[in-house]
Image 1 (cartoon, rainbow, N blue to C red):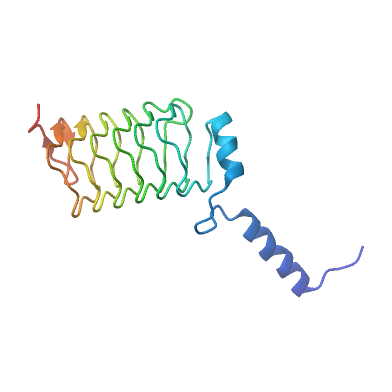
Image 2 (image 1 turned 90 degrees about the vertical axis):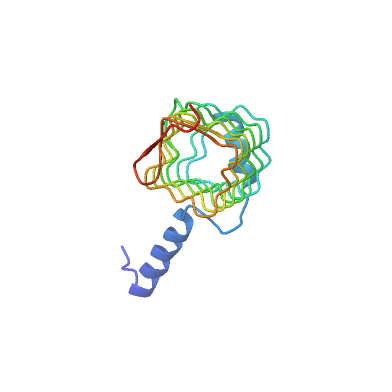
Length: 176
């Protein structure tokens, strides 16, 4: 068996790392989207700007997925029975109007500048999530966990807070 040179081994290692890297910047993957439509699984995939409005995505697994700019208004993502987690998922700039996230685990999710108007986040775990500049007007946050979440410049007009754990750990019952 021939020994490979250090340069050849390095080239093989770098190409395998590049192949395994979860995201390509701005690279919407139509194949992954087609797979998602049939399996409801999108771990580490890139669905940037994907058209998913009105879809029933209960049980969807978006672990570490990039959904930046995705169109998900009126989608149903309540109770995620498959994995019950959406860790480090990127919903930046996504249209999530009236989306149902009831009971979803959105710990560490990025909702920067997301449109969550009238979304149902009841019972959701948004601990340490980033909601900077998110539009949460009219959203339901009943029993929602926001501990450690970043709400800088978020629009919270008409948002219903009831038994909501706020970023500082206090409970907000102003809308009960």
